[in-house]
Image (cartoon, rainbow, N blue to C red; front, side, top):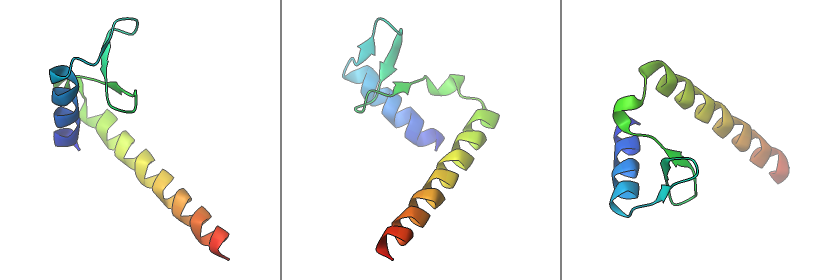
Length: 67
């Protein structure tokens, strides 16, 4: 996950996707990208857990729609 953050940040920096209003870089979808060295392990773990929970909810909704 940290490698993904680094690669996304590096690409945003290289392509100069800087948002002067929010003073940060943005990914292709317009999401804020932070410098990887500023990412804390606890925040990363929480983010992974939230993403997994959202994936499970999306899968459950998909199964329900198929019924």
